[in-house]
Amino acid sequence: MKKIFALMLCLALSALLPCCALPAAGSGNGSEIPFDVEIKDKVFYNQMTDITLNVDDYVGKVIKFEGYLGITERSNWTEYSVYRPGPACCADDVTLGLEIVWDGEYPKEKEWVEAIGVFERYKRSEYNRYRLKLSSLSVVQKKS
View 1 (cartoon, rainbow, N blue to C red):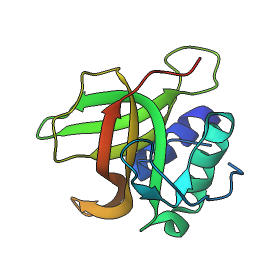
View 2 (cartoon, helix red, strand yellow):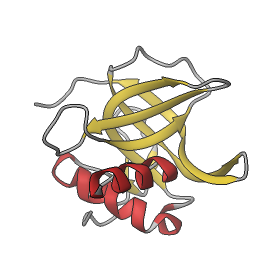
View 3 (cartoon, one colour):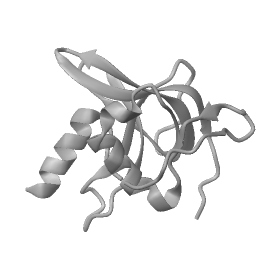
């Protein structure tokens, strides 16, 4: 039941779980895009949890992270995300990441990508949702 609640909370916020990394100012790789928060591998799950629990602290921040590109077809829209499989007992238990929106062409589903963008609140129907409005989306080599 706790897993289902956690998954639903994450999906509702479009921020799927991690904690404890301090925001660090920096710049993107070759694209030199400045960012406020870089979510690194060792703190990915903790940082996503922190985003989920403290969503208002991240609105307006530029976030940079890597993960798989997810594509979910809905009845009247397509939802894109960058995610990682969660630490659970089964492969299909949970994924952690952020919904994204991008003006450019999306790579193929399940490509490993680097995403950089502004974390924003928006409304779908009457619900507040959250996503990363991207300024950069590129396929990169996955670190082992």
